Length: 406
Picture 1: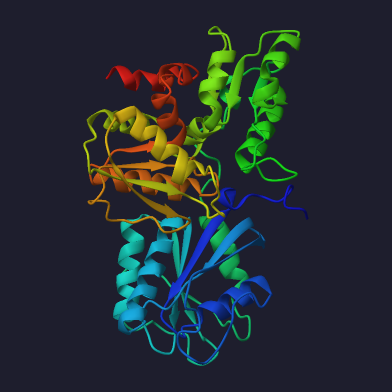
Picture 2: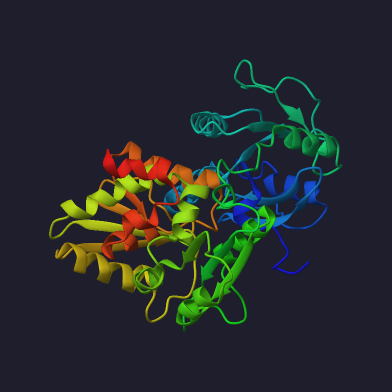
């Protein structure tokens, strides 16, 4: 199956597998998948970093399995590994807590179960190694908790484990589509896709691909062009487009080209609503107007990529923010899973659209900031504000844009 036709990682159910060293986490993963996806060893601590694998897992369908380091690891390096395991809870739509059935339910298991409860993640407790010990009550298991006995070695109850996971799986449909609810069948929707040195060769980036698919599923007509051909494209259409969607970096140029009676927004803003909390991130934009010299801003991306000259996160956004505020603010950066849970050192957070993150993880990051009183905004919203077109970019969402008046 080609990467173009496969389900993106951010749209798959993420299953986090947690437990102590040598409880059999990797062995259970291999038994569930029928493949040697994870290294199995008698040596404690074989899994030293979270390992993610996208695959089809019947009867669930497309999933991402997350194999994590042991939650009982020791020493300074071990503590870092344990922290990385806890971080993976933020990515997990489902959690498997694997315990060693020959040893019982121990304090590290109890601490992990507490964290799972706190984050309200659907979970199963799985006692591995039922081939080595009688299937009886698990010593130390909290009252009211149920356990499923399995054997990764013999395959006993592995099928039941997958069936129970499927029954627990949350609805994978996001609260909002990308744009389908704001357009009608047969509408023309123009997508502006700049092709420059930062654009991937031979393909469109994921938000562009997914937006096109959402438009097609609605029965509307996507028209894709570069910013350099936008004026010609608009003049050549047989009817006025219902909407123009642009890469945020071209906001100013595109806004000057698109007539005021045509709605305009960006891919990043669409994904702020689709994966995150657009209203909360609109409120976060206001923090720009109160920044002072020396304030620290975290610019965070959900994916990792090779940064190059003209990079949006490390070059363009800092330049535009400094120009808009007139302040010498300080910038810090995070990417991939490295989102700090303690945000107290930052005056605000500016986050990408999160196309590579699950809805759960993106919303966790937004809540994490909101709970600490740290404003969080979206790339597209920040760019629109610094270019003086924020209100225009939100006209497609009048029910949410009202936040600006609050």
